[in-house]
Length: 614
Image (tube, rainbow, N blue to C red; front, side):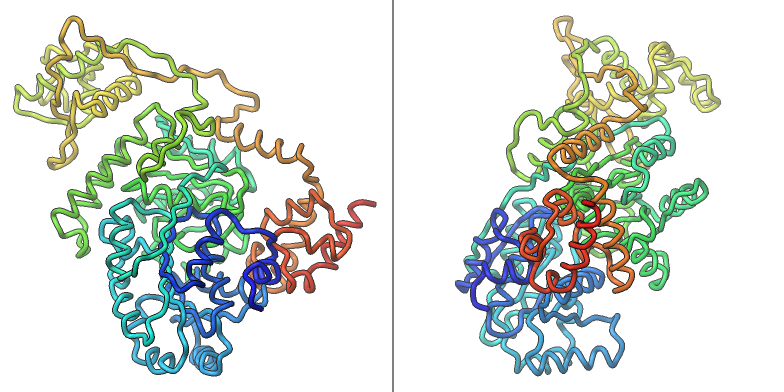
């Protein structure tokens, strides 16, 4: 097979390429290095899998996680492609069988981890193998300025240099700032690469920031509106994962947990339970997710705010990989900032030890905090971080769907700044909670012990809610009237506030209106997702047939011991339930149905569709 379009249809079942895919494929086939920045769900894998199948020899794919290798290799094999992986999960016999397949030319794509590149055995058995292409997946891991730096990625350039003749090198990532992209090109020694950025936007994702008084209550409200949907809940620490996991299990949720403190067997079992749809929720630290190819994740909830926007966008982007509407919700409070500051400044990892790097990470945390505090379009804020322009309003985030009104907060702002100043006069700095307690006239033992009930600003905002004071304080920090500093703990200090007491100066702030409860007490994201799903249904999808197809797919997946999306993704089943093919010719026209799957599954699914029609 020598034609890229033939491979696209025969092996992967698609009639046309997505934006950017063909450009990367053409560059690689022409012998050019490539650096492709494509969002999750944009089809990065095909950009190197198709050239690998067309080039003479074996392509090496360097991938950071065992789970990613296994899933991609299984999917490729199901599509009739000669693929394999080498990692610690293989038994001695499986490893020997894979090496034999490589040496006899029966592997077109070999997935390996970067840690294995220095293995002497690897060098011995691939030195006689033609290697036309080396692919670096999750290429941002090579940069210490990225959000997931891995020292093992620094070995890749040396490995490539050892291969004679030098292969084409293609690097792929979904999230990278300009600085990180420059690092990728330099540290991987890419030669005048074909560079493409297809954009960061994921239109099917809905973004929302909540600032609840009680996070656990807010979490249950989110989950109640998403019953039976697959989702990930991210927590900042292992302790938080255990706490939320226990809470969900006690309340009857089918949940699994994942963090580095669990032994390897339990982590693998829990991950498989989620991937194979035995559990529909997984509670995890950021140790979970990179390379997880599960396509039917309908929501990602961050119980704690991540350290930076890159991490957040990558983790949130694990929702909606199949293009279906999905929700990305962040539950925020000030404690999240303190937790992340502690993790950054107290880390014992080597990469955290550099003072400049630590300062950089704290600046990234500040940018993440600004995302949670603003009233502007959330999508616009995310895209702007990566240097991409977008409309003022996306119409698909909580800020764009809220009703805001501009209010004058001059007097409240003056009282808040005055309180910080009065504390400074006494040689003290405190965090937001203490300042709020003083302003609201708290009579706590701590307030009395420090004598703060004698401050002129004690109780001056006694009739104002703590939530409103915190919102105004966050606004004053974002506009630099106040600043935060990291002492023994984060404290609020005076910023550029000289003109705040100017009689002609008015402090205007956009605050969300209190909304009346919507039907069925649904929150904005649930309304958004359901509305979009109804729109899809009205476009011709037979939802009853779709559910029957899902059941059939699950039966096949269980029988074959593979994740359901390896058989067919939800997007493929949706197209089936819309077009209702009743012949093999019609079935082959469904996107995602290649020749192998047509032969293997065609008649089974067609029979179900025919029965549904009668």
